[in-house]
Length: 334
Ligand code: COA
Image 1 (tube, helix red, strand yellow):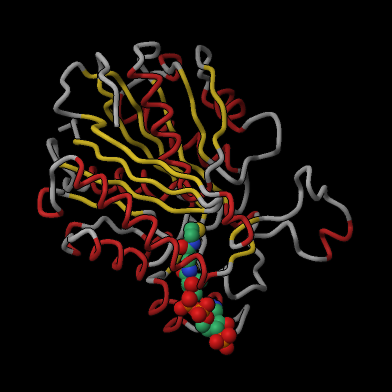
Image 2 (cartoon, protein in one colour):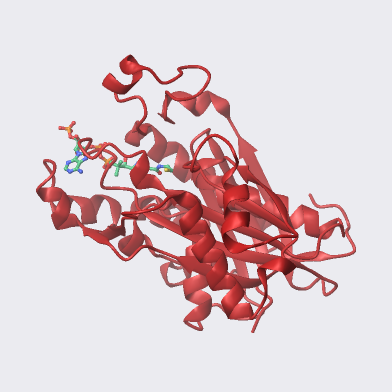
Protein backbone atom coordinates (compact mmCIF):
# COMPACT_ATOMS: atom_id res chain seq x y z
CA UNK A 1 0.00 0.00 0.00
CA UNK A 2 1.00 3.61 -0.34
CA UNK A 3 2.76 5.68 2.25
CA UNK A 4 1.49 9.13 3.11
CA UNK A 5 2.98 11.87 0.96
CA UNK A 6 2.35 15.57 0.98
CA UNK A 7 1.49 15.50 -2.70
CA UNK A 8 -0.43 13.27 -5.05
CA UNK A 9 1.02 12.70 -8.50
CA UNK A 10 -1.43 14.13 -10.99
CA UNK A 11 -1.53 13.80 -14.76
CA UNK A 12 -1.91 17.41 -15.91
CA UNK A 13 -1.28 17.02 -19.64
CA UNK A 14 -1.26 14.47 -22.42
CA UNK A 15 0.17 14.21 -25.92
CA UNK A 16 0.53 11.64 -28.67
CA UNK A 17 2.09 10.82 -32.00
CA UNK A 18 1.34 8.05 -34.44
CA UNK A 19 2.97 7.88 -37.88
CA UNK A 20 0.76 8.50 -40.91
CA UNK A 21 1.45 5.28 -42.78
CA UNK A 22 -1.30 2.70 -42.15
CA UNK A 23 -0.88 -1.05 -42.60
CA UNK A 24 -4.34 -2.61 -42.78
CA UNK A 25 -5.05 -6.33 -42.50
CA UNK A 26 -5.23 -6.66 -46.28
CA UNK A 27 -1.59 -5.59 -46.46
CA UNK A 28 -0.64 -8.78 -44.60
CA UNK A 29 -2.64 -11.03 -46.93
CA UNK A 30 -0.02 -10.38 -49.59
CA UNK A 31 2.87 -11.01 -47.18
CA UNK A 32 1.89 -14.12 -45.21
CA UNK A 33 -0.77 -16.82 -45.04
CA UNK A 34 -3.49 -14.89 -43.20
CA UNK A 35 -6.68 -12.97 -43.80
CA UNK A 36 -8.59 -9.97 -42.48
CA UNK A 37 -11.30 -12.13 -40.87
CA UNK A 38 -8.76 -14.21 -38.88
CA UNK A 39 -6.86 -11.18 -37.63
CA UNK A 40 -9.97 -9.22 -36.68
CA UNK A 41 -11.77 -12.09 -34.95
CA UNK A 42 -8.68 -13.40 -33.07
CA UNK A 43 -7.15 -10.07 -32.09
CA UNK A 44 -9.58 -7.16 -32.67
CA UNK A 45 -6.97 -5.40 -34.84
CA UNK A 46 -7.98 -3.72 -38.13
CA UNK A 47 -4.89 -1.65 -38.79
CA UNK A 48 -1.65 -0.43 -37.26
CA UNK A 49 0.86 2.38 -37.99
CA UNK A 50 4.34 2.13 -39.48
CA UNK A 51 7.15 4.63 -38.96
CA UNK A 52 8.94 4.62 -42.31
CA UNK A 53 11.74 7.04 -41.45
CA UNK A 54 13.14 7.71 -38.03
CA UNK A 55 13.39 5.98 -34.68
CA UNK A 56 11.69 5.62 -31.31
CA UNK A 57 13.18 8.94 -30.15
CA UNK A 58 11.32 10.66 -33.02
CA UNK A 59 8.02 9.09 -31.97
CA UNK A 60 8.65 10.08 -28.33
CA UNK A 61 9.83 13.61 -29.17
CA UNK A 62 6.76 14.25 -31.33
CA UNK A 63 4.43 13.00 -28.59
CA UNK A 64 6.06 15.29 -26.03
CA UNK A 65 5.98 18.26 -28.42
CA UNK A 66 2.25 17.63 -28.88
CA UNK A 67 1.85 17.61 -25.09
CA UNK A 68 3.85 20.84 -24.69
CA UNK A 69 1.83 22.54 -27.42
CA UNK A 70 -1.47 21.59 -25.80
CA UNK A 71 -0.21 22.92 -22.44
CA UNK A 72 1.37 26.02 -24.00
CA UNK A 73 4.50 25.05 -22.12
CA UNK A 74 8.20 25.23 -22.96
CA UNK A 75 10.48 22.18 -23.03
CA UNK A 76 12.81 24.08 -20.71
CA UNK A 77 10.27 23.66 -17.91
CA UNK A 78 10.61 19.85 -17.90
CA UNK A 79 12.56 18.42 -14.93
CA UNK A 80 12.68 14.72 -15.86
CA UNK A 81 11.99 12.63 -18.97
CA UNK A 82 11.31 8.91 -18.53
CA UNK A 83 11.07 6.91 -21.74
CA UNK A 84 9.37 3.52 -21.47
CA UNK A 85 10.46 1.44 -24.44
CA UNK A 86 11.77 -1.93 -25.61
CA UNK A 87 12.87 -0.46 -28.91
CA UNK A 88 15.44 2.16 -27.89
CA UNK A 89 17.23 3.91 -30.76
CA UNK A 90 20.38 2.09 -29.57
CA UNK A 91 21.70 0.46 -26.39
CA UNK A 92 23.32 3.69 -25.37
CA UNK A 93 22.97 6.56 -25.09
CA UNK A 94 19.52 6.19 -23.57
CA UNK A 95 16.63 7.24 -25.78
CA UNK A 96 15.71 9.77 -23.06
CA UNK A 97 18.96 11.65 -23.84
CA UNK A 98 18.15 11.71 -27.56
CA UNK A 99 14.62 12.90 -26.86
CA UNK A 100 15.90 15.58 -24.47
CA UNK A 101 18.18 16.89 -27.21
CA UNK A 102 15.50 16.76 -29.91
CA UNK A 103 12.96 18.76 -27.94
CA UNK A 104 15.45 21.14 -26.30
CA UNK A 105 14.65 20.18 -22.70
CA UNK A 106 17.85 21.79 -21.51
CA UNK A 107 17.04 21.59 -17.79
CA UNK A 108 15.95 17.94 -17.73
CA UNK A 109 17.63 14.69 -16.83
CA UNK A 110 16.12 11.37 -17.72
CA UNK A 111 16.46 7.68 -18.38
CA UNK A 112 14.89 4.72 -20.18
CA UNK A 113 12.80 2.09 -18.48
CA UNK A 114 12.36 -1.40 -19.90
CA UNK A 115 9.22 -3.28 -18.90
CA UNK A 116 7.81 -4.12 -22.34
CA UNK A 117 4.02 -3.81 -22.49
CA UNK A 118 3.91 -2.79 -18.82
CA UNK A 119 6.47 -0.07 -19.54
CA UNK A 120 4.09 2.85 -19.26
CA UNK A 121 2.67 1.69 -15.92
CA UNK A 122 6.13 1.09 -14.45
CA UNK A 123 7.41 4.44 -15.75
CA UNK A 124 4.29 6.24 -14.57
CA UNK A 125 4.80 4.86 -11.07
CA UNK A 126 8.48 5.86 -11.14
CA UNK A 127 7.68 9.37 -12.36
CA UNK A 128 4.86 9.68 -9.84
CA UNK A 129 7.24 8.77 -7.01
CA UNK A 130 9.66 11.52 -8.07
CA UNK A 131 6.80 14.01 -7.91
CA UNK A 132 5.24 12.72 -4.68
CA UNK A 133 8.61 12.92 -2.92
CA UNK A 134 8.51 16.65 -3.56
CA UNK A 135 11.79 16.54 -5.48
CA UNK A 136 10.44 17.35 -8.94
CA UNK A 137 7.52 19.38 -10.21
CA UNK A 138 7.29 18.49 -13.91
CA UNK A 139 7.99 14.91 -14.92
CA UNK A 140 7.23 13.70 -18.43
CA UNK A 141 6.59 9.99 -18.91
CA UNK A 142 6.46 8.82 -22.51
CA UNK A 143 5.64 5.33 -23.76
CA UNK A 144 7.20 4.92 -27.20
CA UNK A 145 7.92 1.93 -29.38
CA UNK A 146 8.90 1.39 -32.97
CA UNK A 147 7.82 -2.23 -32.88
CA UNK A 148 8.28 -2.54 -36.65
CA UNK A 149 12.04 -2.48 -35.98
CA UNK A 150 11.94 -5.84 -34.16
CA UNK A 151 9.04 -7.60 -35.90
CA UNK A 152 9.71 -10.44 -38.33
CA UNK A 153 7.32 -9.73 -41.20
CA UNK A 154 7.45 -13.38 -42.27
CA UNK A 155 6.18 -14.65 -38.87
CA UNK A 156 2.39 -14.64 -39.03
CA UNK A 157 2.11 -15.33 -35.30
CA UNK A 158 3.53 -11.95 -34.36
CA UNK A 159 3.79 -9.54 -37.30
CA UNK A 160 0.07 -8.79 -37.46
CA UNK A 161 -0.05 -7.77 -33.80
CA UNK A 162 2.25 -4.78 -33.46
CA UNK A 163 2.32 -1.13 -34.51
CA UNK A 164 4.44 1.99 -33.98
CA UNK A 165 3.41 4.92 -31.79
CA UNK A 166 4.10 7.08 -28.76
CA UNK A 167 2.20 8.97 -26.13
CA UNK A 168 3.26 11.13 -23.20
CA UNK A 169 1.83 12.39 -19.93
CA UNK A 170 2.96 15.27 -17.73
CA UNK A 171 2.94 14.53 -14.00
CA UNK A 172 2.80 17.38 -11.49
CA UNK A 173 2.25 17.54 -7.72
CA UNK A 174 -1.27 18.08 -6.40
CA UNK A 175 -2.05 19.05 -2.83
CA UNK A 176 -5.62 17.98 -3.48
CA UNK A 177 -5.45 14.27 -2.58
CA UNK A 178 -8.85 13.49 -4.05
CA UNK A 179 -7.31 13.50 -7.55
CA UNK A 180 -4.25 11.84 -9.06
CA UNK A 181 -2.60 8.54 -8.24
CA UNK A 182 -4.46 6.71 -5.50
CA UNK A 183 -2.97 3.21 -5.42
CA UNK A 184 -1.04 0.70 -7.52
CA UNK A 185 0.22 -2.89 -7.70
CA UNK A 186 3.24 -3.80 -9.84
CA UNK A 187 4.75 -7.27 -10.32
CA UNK A 188 7.53 -9.06 -12.20
CA UNK A 189 8.19 -12.77 -12.73
CA UNK A 190 11.32 -13.55 -14.73
CA UNK A 191 10.35 -17.20 -15.11
CA UNK A 192 8.23 -15.94 -18.02
CA UNK A 193 11.31 -15.12 -20.07
CA UNK A 194 11.00 -18.11 -22.40
CA UNK A 195 7.47 -17.24 -23.59
CA UNK A 196 8.13 -13.72 -24.85
CA UNK A 197 11.52 -12.26 -25.68
CA UNK A 198 14.06 -11.02 -28.16
CA UNK A 199 16.92 -13.42 -27.62
CA UNK A 200 19.94 -11.79 -29.21
CA UNK A 201 21.75 -8.48 -29.27
CA UNK A 202 22.42 -8.31 -25.54
CA UNK A 203 25.29 -9.63 -23.43
CA UNK A 204 23.89 -13.18 -23.38
CA UNK A 205 23.83 -13.58 -27.15
CA UNK A 206 25.80 -10.75 -28.76
CA UNK A 207 24.97 -10.08 -32.38
CA UNK A 208 26.75 -12.30 -34.88
CA UNK A 209 25.97 -13.97 -38.19
CA UNK A 210 24.41 -16.94 -36.46
CA UNK A 211 22.00 -14.84 -34.36
CA UNK A 212 20.95 -13.02 -37.52
CA UNK A 213 20.49 -16.27 -39.47
CA UNK A 214 18.41 -17.69 -36.62
CA UNK A 215 16.23 -14.55 -36.59
CA UNK A 216 17.02 -13.95 -32.94
CA UNK A 217 16.85 -10.17 -33.30
CA UNK A 218 13.09 -10.38 -33.70
CA UNK A 219 10.29 -10.81 -31.15
CA UNK A 220 9.48 -14.38 -30.26
CA UNK A 221 6.14 -15.06 -28.57
CA UNK A 222 4.34 -18.24 -27.51
CA UNK A 223 0.96 -16.59 -28.01
CA UNK A 224 -1.16 -19.23 -26.29
CA UNK A 225 1.00 -19.35 -23.16
CA UNK A 226 1.12 -15.56 -22.89
CA UNK A 227 -2.61 -15.23 -23.51
CA UNK A 228 -3.49 -17.29 -20.43
CA UNK A 229 -1.13 -15.57 -18.01
CA UNK A 230 -1.99 -12.13 -19.39
CA UNK A 231 -5.68 -12.51 -18.60
CA UNK A 232 -5.00 -13.88 -15.13
CA UNK A 233 -2.26 -11.34 -14.37
CA UNK A 234 -4.18 -8.24 -15.45
CA UNK A 235 -7.45 -9.41 -13.93
CA UNK A 236 -5.95 -10.44 -10.58
CA UNK A 237 -4.14 -7.16 -9.89
CA UNK A 238 -7.04 -5.03 -11.15
CA UNK A 239 -9.46 -6.92 -8.94
CA UNK A 240 -7.17 -6.72 -5.90
CA UNK A 241 -6.65 -2.98 -6.46
CA UNK A 242 -10.36 -2.27 -6.76
CA UNK A 243 -11.22 -4.40 -3.73
CA UNK A 244 -8.60 -3.02 -1.38
CA UNK A 245 -9.82 0.49 -2.11
CA UNK A 246 -13.32 -0.61 -1.08
CA UNK A 247 -14.64 -0.20 -4.61
CA UNK A 248 -16.42 -2.46 -7.09
CA UNK A 249 -16.35 -2.54 -10.89
CA UNK A 250 -19.45 -0.30 -10.82
CA UNK A 251 -17.48 2.47 -9.08
CA UNK A 252 -14.80 2.56 -11.77
CA UNK A 253 -15.51 4.88 -14.70
CA UNK A 254 -12.82 3.57 -17.03
CA UNK A 255 -10.69 0.48 -17.35
CA UNK A 256 -7.63 1.26 -19.49
CA UNK A 257 -6.11 -2.10 -20.37
CA UNK A 258 -2.95 -2.66 -22.35
CA UNK A 259 -4.07 -3.33 -25.92
CA UNK A 260 -2.57 -6.68 -26.93
CA UNK A 261 -5.66 -8.65 -27.89
CA UNK A 262 -9.36 -7.74 -27.70
CA UNK A 263 -10.17 -11.16 -26.27
CA UNK A 264 -7.70 -10.60 -23.41
CA UNK A 265 -9.27 -7.18 -22.78
CA UNK A 266 -12.82 -8.59 -22.76
CA UNK A 267 -11.87 -11.41 -20.41
CA UNK A 268 -10.13 -9.00 -18.03
CA UNK A 269 -13.11 -6.62 -17.99
CA UNK A 270 -15.45 -9.50 -17.28
CA UNK A 271 -13.33 -10.80 -14.40
CA UNK A 272 -13.25 -7.40 -12.70
CA UNK A 273 -16.98 -6.90 -13.26
CA UNK A 274 -16.78 -3.98 -15.67
CA UNK A 275 -19.18 -3.23 -18.45
CA UNK A 276 -17.64 -3.21 -21.94
CA UNK A 277 -18.70 0.38 -22.58
CA UNK A 278 -16.39 1.51 -19.74
CA UNK A 279 -13.30 -0.04 -21.33
CA UNK A 280 -10.98 2.22 -23.34
CA UNK A 281 -9.99 0.73 -26.70
CA UNK A 282 -7.68 1.68 -29.53
CA UNK A 283 -6.47 -1.76 -30.56
CA UNK A 284 -8.52 -1.74 -33.80
CA UNK A 285 -6.69 1.40 -35.02
CA UNK A 286 -3.19 0.93 -33.71
CA UNK A 287 -2.67 -2.75 -32.77
CA UNK A 288 -0.24 -3.38 -29.94
CA UNK A 289 2.02 -0.33 -29.61
CA UNK A 290 3.66 -1.84 -26.48
CA UNK A 291 4.53 1.01 -24.06
CA UNK A 292 2.26 3.47 -25.88
CA UNK A 293 -1.14 1.72 -25.70
CA UNK A 294 -2.34 3.08 -22.33
CA UNK A 295 -1.32 6.75 -22.70
CA UNK A 296 -2.66 6.75 -26.28
CA UNK A 297 -6.04 5.68 -24.87
CA UNK A 298 -5.91 8.33 -22.15
CA UNK A 299 -4.99 11.05 -24.66
CA UNK A 300 -7.68 10.21 -27.19
CA UNK A 301 -10.49 9.65 -24.67
CA UNK A 302 -9.59 12.87 -22.85
CA UNK A 303 -9.46 14.89 -26.05
CA UNK A 304 -12.76 13.37 -27.20
CA UNK A 305 -14.34 14.61 -23.98
CA UNK A 306 -15.10 11.10 -22.71
CA UNK A 307 -12.55 11.05 -19.89
CA UNK A 308 -13.62 13.69 -17.40
CA UNK A 309 -12.40 15.29 -14.19
CA UNK A 310 -13.28 13.09 -11.22
CA UNK A 311 -13.42 9.86 -13.25
CA UNK A 312 -11.98 6.86 -11.44
CA UNK A 313 -9.63 5.06 -13.80
CA UNK A 314 -7.91 1.68 -13.51
CA UNK A 315 -4.96 1.22 -15.87
CA UNK A 316 -3.79 -2.40 -16.25
CA UNK A 317 -1.01 -4.01 -18.25
CA UNK A 318 0.82 -7.26 -18.88
CA UNK A 319 4.00 -7.80 -20.84
CA UNK A 320 7.29 -9.57 -21.40
CA UNK A 321 9.31 -10.41 -18.34
CA UNK A 322 6.73 -11.24 -17.23
CA UNK A 323 5.76 -7.79 -16.00
CA UNK A 324 2.30 -6.70 -14.98
CA UNK A 325 0.37 -4.33 -12.80
CA UNK A 326 -2.50 -1.94 -12.28
CA UNK A 327 -2.86 1.68 -11.13
CA UNK A 328 -5.88 3.47 -9.74
CA UNK A 329 -6.03 7.17 -10.55
CA UNK A 330 -8.67 9.86 -10.34
CA UNK A 331 -8.58 12.05 -13.43
CA UNK A 332 -7.91 15.60 -12.42
CA UNK A 333 -8.05 17.86 -15.45
CA UNK A 334 -11.12 19.49 -17.04
N1 COA B 1 -3.31 -15.74 -39.62
C1 COA B 1 -3.87 -16.95 -39.73
N2 COA B 1 -3.60 -17.96 -38.91
C2 COA B 1 -2.72 -17.71 -37.91
C3 COA B 1 -2.10 -16.48 -37.74
C4 COA B 1 -2.42 -15.46 -38.66
N3 COA B 1 -1.87 -14.25 -38.59
N4 COA B 1 -1.30 -16.54 -36.67
C5 COA B 1 -1.42 -17.77 -36.17
N5 COA B 1 -2.26 -18.50 -36.93
C6 COA B 1 -2.65 -19.88 -36.77
C7 COA B 1 -1.65 -20.66 -35.93
O1 COA B 1 -0.57 -21.06 -36.74
C8 COA B 1 -2.49 -21.82 -35.48
O2 COA B 1 -2.57 -22.77 -36.54
P1 COA B 1 -2.36 -24.32 -36.24
O3 COA B 1 -3.46 -24.67 -35.29
O4 COA B 1 -2.47 -24.92 -37.59
O5 COA B 1 -1.00 -24.43 -35.62
C9 COA B 1 -3.89 -21.21 -35.32
O6 COA B 1 -3.87 -19.98 -36.05
C10 COA B 1 -4.25 -20.91 -33.89
O7 COA B 1 -3.12 -20.31 -33.29
P2 COA B 1 -3.16 -19.83 -31.81
O8 COA B 1 -1.81 -19.39 -31.38
O9 COA B 1 -3.89 -20.84 -30.99
O10 COA B 1 -4.11 -18.56 -31.97
P3 COA B 1 -4.70 -17.72 -30.84
O11 COA B 1 -6.17 -17.75 -30.91
O12 COA B 1 -4.05 -18.00 -29.52
O13 COA B 1 -4.24 -16.24 -31.26
C11 COA B 1 -2.55 -14.65 -30.70
C12 COA B 1 -2.89 -15.95 -31.41
C13 COA B 1 -1.07 -14.35 -30.83
C14 COA B 1 -3.36 -13.56 -31.36
C15 COA B 1 -2.95 -14.78 -29.23
O14 COA B 1 -2.43 -15.96 -28.71
C16 COA B 1 -2.48 -13.64 -28.36
O15 COA B 1 -2.94 -12.53 -28.49
N6 COA B 1 -1.60 -13.92 -27.40
C17 COA B 1 -1.18 -13.00 -26.35
C18 COA B 1 -0.55 -11.73 -26.85
C19 COA B 1 -0.17 -10.88 -25.67
O16 COA B 1 -0.95 -10.59 -24.80
N7 COA B 1 1.05 -10.47 -25.54
C20 COA B 1 1.45 -9.84 -24.30
C21 COA B 1 1.89 -8.54 -24.37
S1 COA B 1 2.78 -8.14 -25.79
